[in-house]
Image (tube, rainbow, N blue to C red; front, side, top):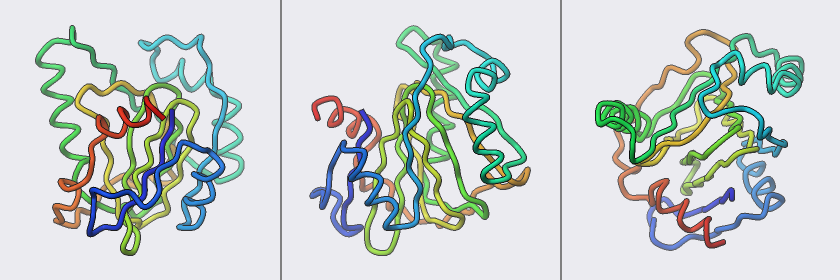
Amino acid sequence: MSLLTVWSDADATTPLIQTPDPEVIGRELAGVGVSYRRFDTRDDVPLDAGQEEVLAAYSDLVGGLVAEHGYTLIDVAQLHLSEESPDSVKETAAVARLKFLSEHTHDEEEIRFFSHGSGVFYLHIGDRVLGMLCTAGDLLSVPALTTHWFDMGTMPDFTAIRFFRTDDGWVGTFTGSDIAERFPTHDELAEVASHA
């Protein structure tokens, strides 16, 4: 279940808002310029499907977004770990997770459609931090230059279609802040969502 949590950036212990309600999520995110939509997902796409198979399965969604926004580069990011995954794969995933856990910006908007699994985008806007636990069916568009970080969890399990306008639009500019270390992790928020 998707979950939006909003905190003061000075207090990561007491949420100002915490909701799984898609209408409230959409309204709160729109208030800070972030687009959030829900789409149906397909249950006939295997977890080990390659990029071409995932994009073909969601060709209508992808084509509509390309026509609407002019994206020129579309790819698929995915990682599916389990307790049985080799240690080398777990170590590689841990390194990848740490890279995105640091607060950063991009020169281009960041658009992700989750067709499977989950990940949390943390948006540091003004004096608030909005933690959006995205799950299958969520499309999130974070405006260019929005300060944020991303957590895929300690046992990543997600497939996300990514949309870009330029080849280097995903390159991050890191702020050097340690703010991400003070906020609940993907795993903690996923646990909350499982009881919501």
